[in-house]
Image (cartoon, rainbow, N blue to C red):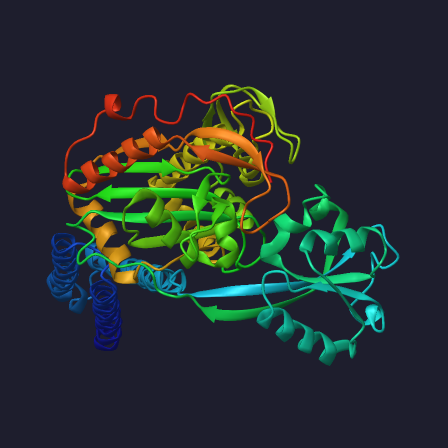
Length: 509
């Protein structure tokens, strides 16, 4: 009888130890395969796993004689329980490793989505109509900027409700007017042309409803050149925030425009904010427009135009949207942001006090969208965008986010995309884990003088606000980029006064 108990007990010990060996091997393999740890930490991890297995095996062997003699070995029993717990923890850790690895793959993108919307007036006759309710009704369309994608959407619309009752308008502004004047029951228009629709109707978003959206995916033209090694070579990242909800891949205006120059050797980052209304020359044709409108023609046009503007190469890009900012901040559990001003936001009606305060996702979004409350409108907004980005990075680097790991990754996945490869992102993380370095971040902003014009390429004949950049600022910023890339250490004195002394009112499109 004792012999049977002994065999059963030792068999259970062996099974638990085998389970630990399998769990350890699986976890070690996944960490190695996913490249989530620097080599020195991986070696240390393997050493710990081996020592734990050896330790539990020794404890079981030393307690073997006692158990065979019918005595209890508390140490052996405890070690068996601990071995089981270690195995469970390793299995959980393995799922984290797999989830983390899939995250890097999921945020990579080389595609863009073109969204064509069927829109009605909320207070109009068909304000609550379904797509089927619009069968046989009057639709307004415009071919002002493009035809191919709109025609694809119209073909799908005809498949859905068999309609061909279209009225064509020369301009998107006339198309919006037709909807408001009840000349048509609905309009069909690309999401990226929102600014044209808002020209005579500032409250267009709030006063209309999207009945149906047709999306078409297209591979983005590659205009960036990656560096050979992001851990040793300086690089530039273009970060954009598009003015829409839904898919972050949707082609739309580029309302947030940040160029981040990173030198991994000097551990310095230069963050350059370019106001959305900045006057630029489009890369595609050299025509004058404002920066936000470059997003209408795809992220590749924005990147190429900024490269021309700053005389530098953009190596990578990352983009998010309104919903992305809200989701990420909420997933982080909110952030602390220090405001330089006391004001009330136009969107959301939040009262922002001067100084540090907690913000949830919606409040943070309204904070960085606000420009009408400031005399220096878009310049202050650019500064606030940089403040929020810093706050989000600070919170994301906190160990506390481990408890909310899955929620945060899911939030970022759905509203953040980049063309940086998963290996490059992992290399940067490994570098930071390896040296645990403190980074210096410097903020500058393109400044200029505002004026009204009707000569922009995207909206000819429509009087809109444009900011003409001070060339002296642009030249200084170009030199700063060169210095960071060349490894020259910046100081606060080098960036003092760049983009902080404008009193321009940006009541802009």
